[in-house]
Amino acid sequence: MSEDLRSKGAKNEITGAAKEAEGKIRDAAADITGDTSEDLKAKAKTAEGKIQKNFGRAQQDTDDNV
Image (tube, rainbow, N blue to C red; front, top):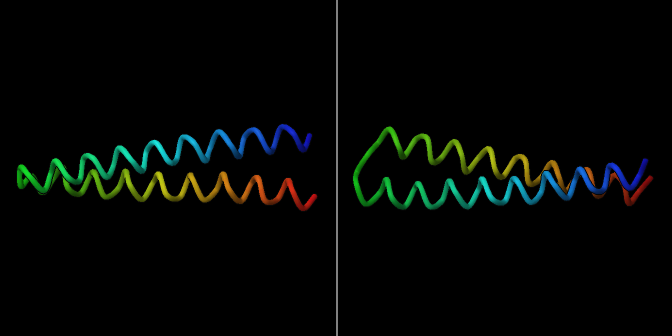
């Protein structure tokens, strides 16, 4: 079971980091184009990625302490 939680945590961390990177790229593009709507979507994607990445880390930390 602990290996399952560790692998889920790793997957969440990687997926979250990818979403965070996508958000940062979209944010930079929105800054260049001046698209406020895209800027808001980019910030939301960045926040979503950070949350998922940190959740994945917490899953792995929990697994280490079980």
